Length: 504
Ligand code: C2O
Ligand code: CU
Ligand code: CU
Image 1 (cartoon, rainbow, N blue to C red):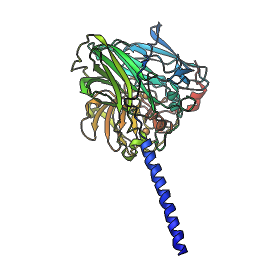
Image 2 (cartoon, protein in one colour):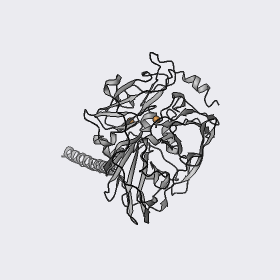
Image 3 (tube, rainbow, N blue to C red):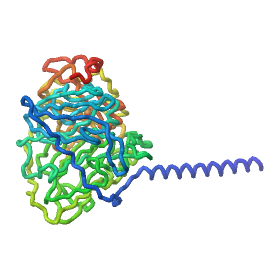
Image 4 (tube, helix red, strand yellow):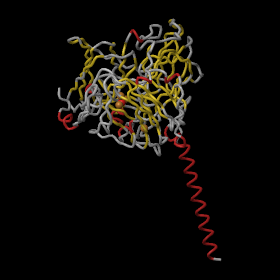
């Protein structure tokens, strides 16, 4: 009898514990979903990053960028942040194809950083990756000739192991490339008027209103914020004065992907991706961007109306992890407030720019990149290892696949690529143009093709990596050098770079 009573009590206790655990499980499951739909008061005018001043010096267009500590108002008092030439984010650099540019990057922080020109075709020593250190108090002055189609590029630190923190604190800005031959006059193009950059970032704050970059429970992707800032503005509205407005979207977030659309389901024209305009405008109602990706869209508004840009739950192809990595979240991002009378703007032309397609037959090499467990092809980043060495001028096909189902994307420096296939089929329209970053849903193979033109440097590597910054910092990155035809990769001596850090 006594034994039965004891067993019964144990049974009840176990049952109770299970209920508590299940309850906690359900709570945790539900707690992973964030929605700000219809809950954002759009009370602050959208900040538009200023165009960086420049001057001509010895035939070069020269910019000055200073990385500095400061503070920023995210709507909860003064939050300590970092920025370029200001408290948060940086000015928009703008240069034309064919121009020689130079940027004096001064590091006024109390620690080393770097500045990388994401999407830019340029010599490796100007790339601003983890080997081009800028020590505290020093100035680094890379120079290169801008030579690529008109595009929305960006810049951000790339210090190995610290990229996530430096970007999260606010070091990021846009670099717009102009080129009459690859742009379309009929598209809105007046910066800050009908051509508006939108740097979209998610932020999280601790009890003191300071930026919190701690990782989420079970996420494995690092920080996922519950507050959206656009160009640093929380709850932004944009006064629209023209019938059509071009939005240059940059996902400048550490880990979060967005699926942008309008709450009234209106359609818009996708006109450009990472590396330039598309061959033809793509009429759609959604565009998904993973960290580092850009999209240019043209939206039509009616006089007097308000329209809300929202991020819907993106399909991350992450299976059971989906909701732990932001795949169930909804955010209201930006309100467009159309004026009572709107200046006319031409319709978006169907044909945009002629772009030659790279040909599979021209590929000298095929390589495979398997993304899994903070490693690429089973290898983690090593500052002194060169993984491979394409020859200058050669064309290569890279096969990209995500094998662990965590959210990964793939970014490569120096080049823009074209997508040949997605699981053997022709790519969808939003992957039909120039890309430098591509999202990789689990177990879908992408073939991309690129040419390594112009620059060779056997000793200075370019990076390829996952642009989920926590993964990149954790080692999901590799290095390649471009060598002259017949050349051999050199030796990356990181210590010498350290010794010369910031030398100028
Ligand atoms: Cu946007 Cu290697 O980086
Ligand atoms: Cu890059
Ligand atoms: Cu990743």
